[in-house]
Structures are given as C-alpha cells and as structure tokens.
Length: 90
Image (cartoon, rainbow, N blue to C red; front, top):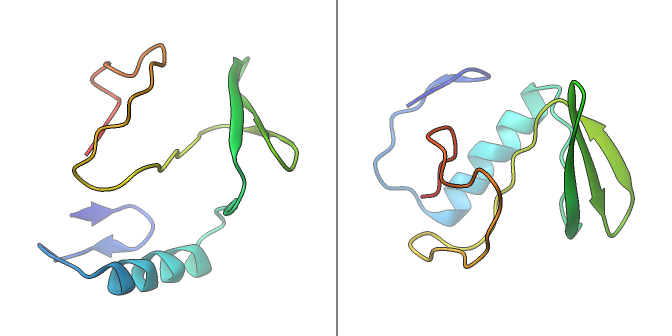
C-alpha cells in the first residue's frame, strides 16, 4: 500500500500494537491534527470543507477521516453518501 505521507508500506497482517506504532509515526511526520477521545456529534458540509462538532468543540476542516468500529464489523448507521464509490468501509 502506498501512503502519500510516508510512502510504501508492505504489510499483509499486522498486530494492533504495531499498527498504532505505525500511525503514531505518521502523525509525528505530518501536519495532521488528530482529535482522539472526542465523540463526533455532527458533520456539516460547508463551502470549501466541513464543520465538525464534537463533545469538545467545533472545528473547520478541508477533509475528515472518521475511523469507527472494529475490523469485520459493519457499522449500523446511515449517512448520506456512505454508499458512494469514494466511501470506504473495511
């Protein structure tokens, strides 16, 4: 898999601990702003991006990465556009 921020990653199976170590490394090398331990309450599409409201505050951003659930367990929520080709659930 080729990740724009860190390049080529060659893994087929990886432990949760190793995966977290990988992502912490990505965050350290990037300008990404992570928001862990905040419950997302609402996402509104705005001109040029999104407004995201959490239990901690409201943020404006150009893109959103929403990571929920466990591998192999499909979330039971309905969101406009979740079935689009650009939406990935794995």
